Image (tube, rainbow, N blue to C red; front, side, top):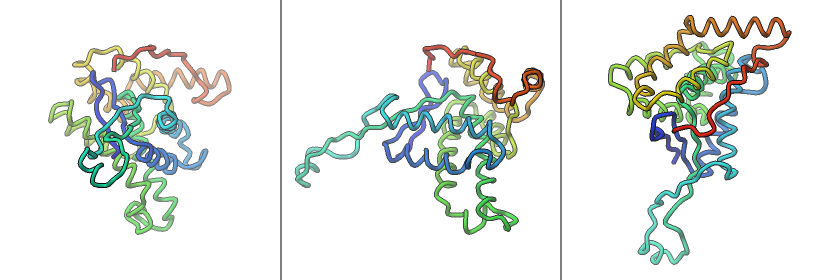
Length: 246
């Protein structure tokens, strides 16, 4: 069963599941973001594919694993006459909170665009019969619901209500996704209590795209114009800590 939980020091979330669980999420995310430039949100797409990259490497054994009870015990093994372990292997992936918040918001857009691509004539594509039971949309919504449940565990009731409203808004896409890296860097340098208190602020900054974002965007635009390149080609060489206090 796909599981998402907060990391011990609330630096982010940990995605856990067996190979089939992670593969299902991996394929659904890959599907809803479309092919290259299909939905013209390439920078946001790359962020979602970054999560896919970690999922794929987890399934390859390049991340951590955890042994989880599977319900088998001595009596069941004896009754069934099989050789079996009483544990399943779960693969794990960790993602920083600002990163997963942006991915969450981007997926709101991608789900709508994916639904529209499958039901071009419907006034409400997401409710069209071709999409209502679509397994990829269902998998993405399950993923998002588990992320929201993690938020609900660590923020105040009032903060959660505001976060839930903000995260339900469509249309949150950043031209300069370098801002997500900036928020990630700020977040990892906070202590656990401050991380919890700052989550509402992080969501607001991503959704409202206020002065801090606009200032960074102008800087990215200036460098991109001067270098005759795309926003996504600009790298400010921010280096993440080798050991994050998850």
